Amino acid sequence: MKIIIENHIPFIHGIFDDVADVVYLPSDQITAEVMKDADALITRTRTRCNEALLTGSKCRFIATATIGTDHIDLDYCHKAGITVVSAPGCNAPAVAQYVLTSIYHTVGDFCGHCLGVVGVGHVGSIVARWAEGFGMKVLRNDPIREENEGGDEFVSLAQIAGQCDIITFHTPHTLTGKYPTHHLADGKFFNSLIRKPVVINSARGPIVDTPMLIEALKEGKVSKTIIDCWEGEPSISTELLSMASIATPHIAGYSYEGKVRATIAVAEALAKHFNLNVRFLTEKPADAPDTVTLQELLSSYNPQVDTDNLKRNPEKFETLRNEYDFRHEPKV
Image 1 (tube, rainbow, N blue to C red):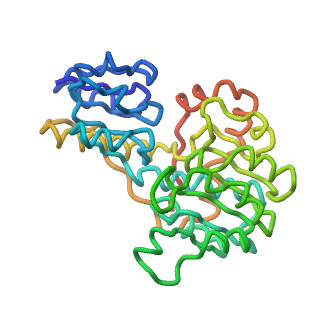
Image 2: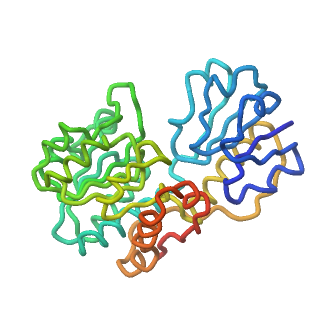
């Protein structure tokens, strides 16, 4: 069998080389011609897995070493009989690390601030839990979980807009359904803000309407912004870049441990699907701890370094991302 693997996926080289014909390629070289005789694909977010890529292909299995699947046409894959797997939660501790260290570097302290967490899945749950451990008041917004679970744990987005000093987004990017998230933070949302909050996007770029965020910053409706995920990546808004307090090249989840979790998850899924006997070169890291100490959190990552690099070299967005030196998650 033949497997196409995006060459920037860490820790995957060699896993399948003894049991399959493996071709490692950069994302821009994964084309319909390449996929024609491929049985499987392991990729990341830059490869658009859709009808244009997959028509006429032998491919029956796609694994993305990421938490999201918005780069994959799931309806087409289902109709074509292509199994799709991802790695949900693999980088959740790293994103929580990024968000909380960025908050500290931006506002100087945790206590006394009200944090709004929009989207309380794998990532949002850890952000909320760790933030409460640092003495922050946390409001949680997740209409899907609220609808499914009930209870009084969740609040409306309007309450987040009215009561929070810091608002962080952790939803997938969706265009359809009962609760679409495309431009969830739009002009209406920014106009409803009361406390001139810090706004954070480390989820997906199009969740935030970039021109509306820029306008909100200029008008003082948003005091500061922390951006890791950008609309139009890798061609990001240089105006928003210049205004952002923390600005990074979509690396919030780029921890050593997160990348190991992702690679093991997708490799195990592919091996199981095709009944392949493979050997992993490292063990799966532990899950996120319930709490972290302030010292361990702040010593584990400084977002200002990545911010300085991106602000100096915005044209190198992809290079900074692809050649990122994976940091370690905080441990207690």
